[in-house]
Amino acid sequence: MKIPFVLLSCLCFLLLSGAHVEARPHRGSDHRRNYKLFLFGDSFVDIGNREATPNRVAISRQWYTPYGMSDSAHGYRPTGRFSDGLVQSDFLAKILGRDESPPAYRAWVDADDDGSQFAGVNFAVAGSSVFFNKSEVAASLETQINQFRDLVRAGDIDQEDLQDSVALVAVSVTHDYALISSWNSDDQFRTFTTAVTDQIVTGVRRLQRLGVSKVLVDLVPPFGCTPWRSWSNHYTTCDSRGNVASSMHNAALKQKLGALDDVLLLNLDDVFNSVFQSGTELSRQFYRKFTPCCDSPDPENGYCGMVGSNGNQQLYSLCPNPGNYFYWDFWHPTQAGWKAVMQALEDPIKDFLDI
Image 1 (cartoon, helix red, strand yellow):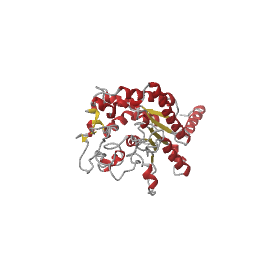
Image 2 (tube, one colour):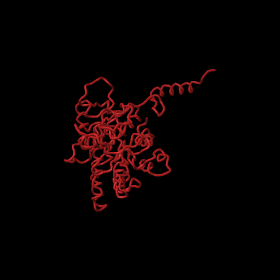
Image 3 (cartoon, one colour):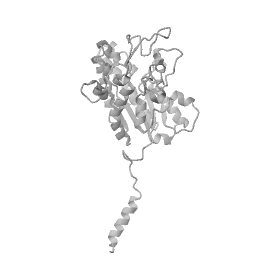
Image 4 (tube, one colour):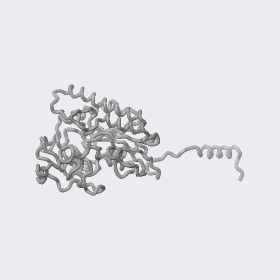
């Protein structure tokens, strides 16, 4: 049978045109975008930038037992993470197809080039805030972004690395709000919240100008539900004053960043509240929601891992199974807690990154 000339011409045109159409990778395909991951913030994502000290003290407790006790990936030992195991940065890296967070900046700048594939850098430091605090040795968010900028300018992070790059800004424990209970009015707090969130927005825009293609930003979890705040209620209910503070912060960030292109807000507030709300699927995963697995009888002066002056007396209590607890210490989720949180956020992150 002869094919009419007009039909044959149309067929050839479609075939030739199709040769220039590139298939868009989609979830479930064999192709996976190789995102470079850059992390900024505090102890929610720090994996060892806060250095160890010769003696066990509160600011270096993450380098001592019982921290790391559930971390099979690192030999069940402390690694500088503020948890019994992996933290938010590790589970985000897993979503991107990696085993764990890229290396800490402190270790990365001191390491020799071993030829391994560049995966990104973790700049986050426990105790960090958006404002520089002279009483803290932790690098502020601005300082961390300056460190990133310097690597870009030096060519250690090149344009190919930035082409498919994602940053997480996780100022989540937010030491800027440490004095919540001493503030007298919502107006006073609202003024400070404006300044804090403006600094976060400035950081996000700087990262975009430096070439980062996608930015994730943590909304803060409900402050009043942390063991630090619920301790006064015997770990039974949240402190409402603390939750007003986190709600104001999150509302301001949504207003300022919610409509920006290539920015995704990670709603830790909603996910954490789903854990605390009885009857939800997330809530059923944890026997204890407010009580920390690693507890101290004196939250003002004690801490998880604290020992007596002779080094032998254990001044904290430890649960038998951290996997049943959402919180590890007064501020930070357990490895199981972070796993549940990031699983709840996995689909929005994958949709945003088109993976």
